[in-house]
Length: 517
Figure: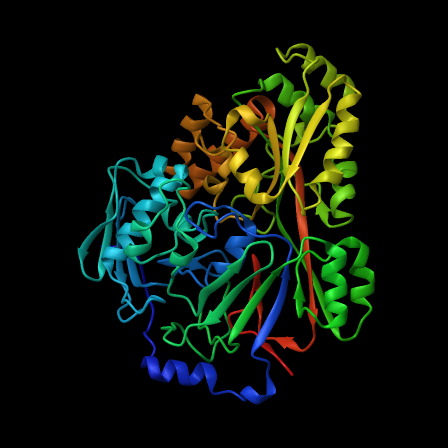
């Protein structure tokens, strides 16, 4: 007997759905919400692109998944009506919702789900390692299965919460993948969500338009629960402006040019909090890291930087007070995976120990350590502090700052750098931490690490998986050092009080947002 069965009731009819989503007092609310984002995605192809911006903008809004996350981290059906898992977590069956339309007017069927999820596996090394040679198959028009020869206890969590999101495209989008870039082209960013990906003007804005044939799920009288629930899409247009400068975002909110701004920096928080017509909040959002190129550096160089780093000095330069010196590779809001294993190695601020470790390295100190970073995220300030720290042990840094698209491309070429700066947003399970993957940029292809990762993802129980996770984190800190972990950042956001109905989980979601005129 299947041990997990969850079901969703379908909405009464699509016409009823749309009447509910647009029948409120439209003359009281604006047709457009202007959102100032701090950067843009390299592609908005969520199977491959791991940027926070792309996922925050599109997941659940334009693109949906078979399953998604509730606020307590539990898994709930989204594009499937129900799912079943056998007793040893090796056979998964998904019963699809019927009548769900893509933005191109086509009904979603098993063909689209299979094409999408098998591409997701091929794009996402962690998933590929977990499932091996197994692939999703269509049992019939509305049933999809995956059959393994081993346990995959984390599969549902990965389908619901991976940074490389397991979104469902029409099969035509998968067939249209650009052979040169490997990305789904922008014109084929087609999903089933309440908003359509309408226009992307690079470095200026992304425009999302309400999808009038959206097939909602859940209870229209209940609030959104995490990423799950009924989406009304009250507002006709969501416009994400790409505004890299924090001062410009702040001034735009003050002038009314923007209704919502991301990454309200420490410099403006006191002012924002003092204004009665502004709502301001912050939340722990993810990790701050330097990802090492393990093909061009040895572990002693990496451990030397870990011994050298002063987390407070580094983070204050970028995040002000909006950070935590927390060593866990997961967030405190995820107690089921939280561990301090290896904490004694976290950013030790010990130059003498760093020199001892550096003496064991094969690194030629006459050569600079080449670091890549994307502009607009404050990395430059942190890396200038790191440059000064490195100089104290005789190491120079060569820092290259480019736009995010260029940096994302460069980091895939191991000859171009020795480390790159990035942040990783919250994920559902530790197997989704991309920097632990053998194939993700930085290449954590250490044999022992990958044996532990496979042991964790194929564990028979969550307890066994957590025990291995503690071993993984300790090994990373004490020996392998795939990243320079610098702590966790908080993301502060602010908006006019005229904006209501948005929900905050992992990011700020605008499915049910309304802006009073």
